[in-house]
Structures are given as C-alpha cells and as structure tokens.
Figure 1 (cartoon, rainbow, N blue to C red):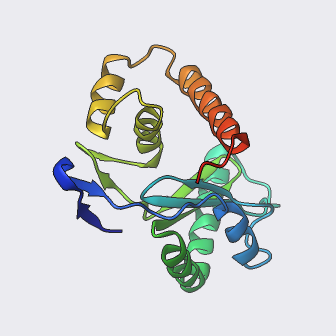
Figure 2 (tube, rainbow, N blue to C red):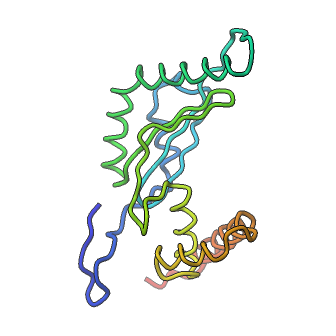
Length: 185
C-alpha cells in the first residue's frame, strides 16, 4: 500500500482494491474444521480481521473463572497450531486485497485478537475506531480522518451507534441507487 503525490492536494493514500468479496474468499480458503461456522470478516482501508468461533468446550468447570481460563487456553492452542497456515493464508490475502490481515478466535465468552494492525491517524487507532472515521469521511461529513476525529470527539456520547448505523444504511441505499442508474462511461 503506497502513498503518492496527488497534484496540489499533497500526499494521499493510494487506492486499494475492493474487498467486498473478502468474507467469501476467506470462507472458501480456510481449512475445514477451523471454525464452527463462517468467520466474521471485518474490512477497512488498512486491515482485514478474521474472527472465527471455535468448537465449544465439553468439560465441566468449577466456576466461571475456570471456564474462562480453559477458553483462553483453547484459543491459545488454536493460535499456535494454526500459525503457519494462517501466515500463508494472510500472505495470499494481503497480496490480493493489499491490506494487513489479522486473526482472532472466539470461544464462549472469550474473544482474542492476534497481532492486530494499528494505523497512524492522529493517534494509533484499532479497526473499530478507524471504521467510524472512514464512515464520516465517506459520507462527506468530514474532509479527512483528522477532521472526522475532531468532529467525533465533540459528539462523544450523543447517539453515536444509532446515528452511524443510519448513516451506513443511507450510504448503502445511495450505492444501490447509483448501481441502478444509467452507465455514463
């Protein structure tokens, strides 16, 4: 993923290929038996995070703390046993989508992410926070991630989840309408 000079506008992030099919690609590429169902695949401009549900524990545990420890142990075992294959799959996906790939696993009440990517904005943000900023930029609410971050800080706590959901829904409707429009190219 490069950066390049874009005329008088300064340095801009290079375009990355679309990753609309990433969930399907990972679903077809992952070995059978890794997860109990299709993994959750979350994509932004810099990173793809793949999180799958591991098979449930069948043992009985004395209390919730013991169960949580067993879940953490099972996730750790999964991480170690699948490391080489995950690295190879990530290498292929990074070539295809030009984004870093991070992994995670979920078991019962425990979720663990492995080596996730931090992208510099004004500060280092994880993917969920970057998705908020990108939604605001993509919708034209802010000109840049920096502007979006300043806007978001001013509005913390004021219906962020429901408003962003409505905004994403409206953007999807706009994309649908655009795809149904005449081809001018």
